[in-house]
Amino acid sequence: MSGSVRITGLEKFGMVGTDATLDVSPTNGYVCKLGTYKSVIDDLEVKGFTADISADGAGGRVFECHANDNLEISDVTIEGKHDTSSKGPMLVGVHSSGGSGHVRNVNLADGGAEVSGGNGGTGMLVSHYHTGSVTIEDCHIGPFPDNGIYCSSDEGDVHVKGGRVENTNVAGVRLDGDSCSLTGTEFVYDTNISGFGGQRPVRCDGGDVEISDVHIDMSISQTEAIRVMSGAESVSVEDCSMDLNGDVRDGISVVSGAGPVETSNNDINGERRYDVFEY
Image (tube, rainbow, N blue to C red):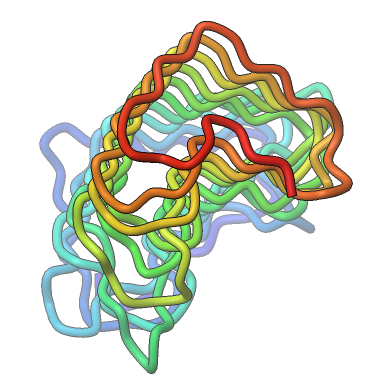
């Protein structure tokens, strides 16, 4: 891939590979831009690809996927470290309030490099224009200098299930929208990385958020494992386990102005200050 593919405005588009590899040439732009937020594809599927971005400067946005009614992405691997200063390797969005999406078995374990004075890519972005519902399931997010999974829309639903997130900056999973959930995901934070600062596994920015059956293993210095921001309307944290073996101050911190936070049946271990701390 020495240029970009841009597909917009179709009712249906599928891109399906069998042991297929995209050998990406150096770029800080788009590789496969499938729909835009202004010209979406109604029914969009991407399945069965490895994108090799191991060449120097071959980061860019490998897959940007905007669907209206139905989005299916599965069995996609980004091989090599994302080493450009913008975008990050993947963005997804469902732009109809009744639309749904499923992003499954995406491997971003090679992560991203810090470039240009602490900048760098986010692993997987949910579009700022997302208004539907998307489930992100069994995805592996490696170290990124920005967020791991970043839901930047204040509308729609986002559900993260299973998978593993490691050593990202700002937040491993950052949730916002009408209704969001985080279930069964493993977080491992054992290496300090440069970037924007604040290596928190989970950050709740807005909407109603349910967190359950999550395991967090932290051995780095950090203020908390889960941070609830003032825009969150309600948050529940239940049946989660945290091994806070580094200098982690609190298990859960709640910023002033946040809605009600309910916790139950959580197992928090380590030399933390508080299980739950309210600013």
